[in-house]
Image: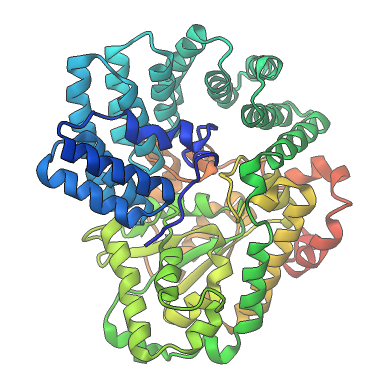
Length: 548
């Protein structure tokens, strides 16, 4: 089985700004050396399989090594990586954590910390921020003057919304490497969050003066745009965002992404789903499998899905997912053995009732692997912003489900997307141009308008503006929709964020009490909207934002 993973020259998905081959991709050869010729041979074969993307073969080779050398760190970490890339994150993280134990023991003996840092990057990427933090703390204990270790520790604290803990380590890293782009950008981000805007501005401008790496320069420009926005200098902010996004589009790895593929998928769903297909299976027929009833939370990017997820997560009777690709994995299972050219609606029309029941069980098995023993005890919220594109599939397989659709003023959504640092993907590549943002918004939301009234699941629309203007009333209505009682802890959701890994770029914003400054932000940038307003006007009117 071949599963898509980053190529050597792609940006590393961990968000470090480095190429994959220079970041998480170098984890394998940096780990402990093999002991016997047989182990060496199996590890060599595993590395070759990883390089070609044959993760099934790589997994086999790593397991062969562990059968004779169960504490071999490279095999433990390599197997963990393979399993995580193949969407078996629960087992994969167990092996990565086993590798961490071995490497910490080796580091204590050898004082070599680079493998700890590299493994920590991988753990952070897969969401085990606590394990990554422990490795970073060990690295700093062993090498307190190592800039890479200090920066990694600061990054872990930052991702846990522990900025005050992160700041001294970030400052120390910059003192040791005053011209390093990565260290300076992280410290500038932390300074920005603390309101030290002049310090952040000066640091980012220094990065731009000394940095010759396009990826790092683009990130520095984007963060400089954030600073200018907070300073109220909208013209310099928009110019910085445009420079940053334009620079990113020149990178070979991003040029290799098919920007049209998301529109192809939307068009196929638009043409293929009709009422008969969307409501093919009666609820009472599928309910015989006695599986839980899922709730899907989606919308467009930057529409408030992360805020909603954090509020819901504060409720003791609710379990929320953290951007887990359950529907993407379901589609992979659906396509198994099918022609690559077949669209999802075409495949669904061929399924039998037994096929449907298998896919429903598969979905809940994946949920159970991620959240053992919790799925049947709590109301489960599957949160993934752009699952809106897969609303037809969800309606077909889960007619009994509920859908929370996050909505926000289209102009604020487009502006926020343009200002945001997303990991490169087919879902975000179009957001790097001002016209591309509007084009993708129009495609996704146009599809939603055309399909929503024909969906089998019950749908509730949740407006971001209602959340920030009348929080309790809005969420009392949400909890009524979900069938759970109001809980006072939800009003203090932001107090529970510290120490929790949040996969989306909104992780810092949702660690604060509710604020209203992001609602209507587009007004400050009104002069930049004429080129895209014709594409957005339909939705401004359809969602009644013309009356706001």
